[in-house]
Length: 238
Image 1: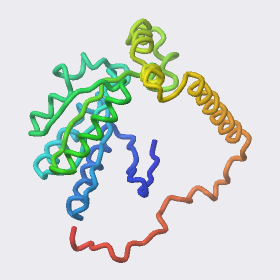
Image 2 (image 1 turned 180 degrees about the vertical axis):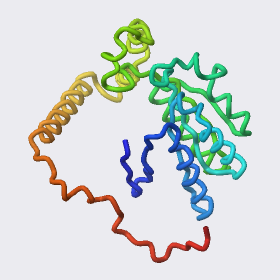
Image 3 (image 1 turned 45 degrees about the vertical axis):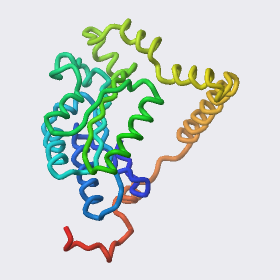
């Protein structure tokens, strides 16, 4: 959850709901100050969309014309609370109007629609240095946390029929697989073999982890601090 890789432009996630949204705006601000063409993309859910810091960040991003795309992964539930009970309005993307930015809602289960929409959003944001809000309507089949099924056995918050409907009719892997076959990009046999290969790689990785020794306690400080230094960083500029 807290993985960070600056070489890939990944600033990491945050355990506090919605707290990574201002980080993305901060990165966008630095890009604007540096005069480069980078665009930040912030990922958050429907539950986080109600956090004050998210609204504050969108407001500031619009005022300062920051190159950031706010990407809301709306999976219908904030832990066990339905969007219908916690989010005002039919579309979270409608909130973009309040901050004078463009917003749209798309099918988050459609791989190609998500790809093409975000490509265009990033392109437009790079050209205009204006923030955008994209809401991807999606769904999660499993619980929000590993012990949810046992904990909420006597008070389920959604019907099994609802889960199966999304899985049966809107599963992104199944629908994308069908599209690849229909467009003659891959054969069914090739995709089946990919599934087999991926499963084998996962099983090998799990076996390696289980058979590996636990690291010693004196390794705890490793990777805590960066060994890089930035002697030419113009601190006075900020």
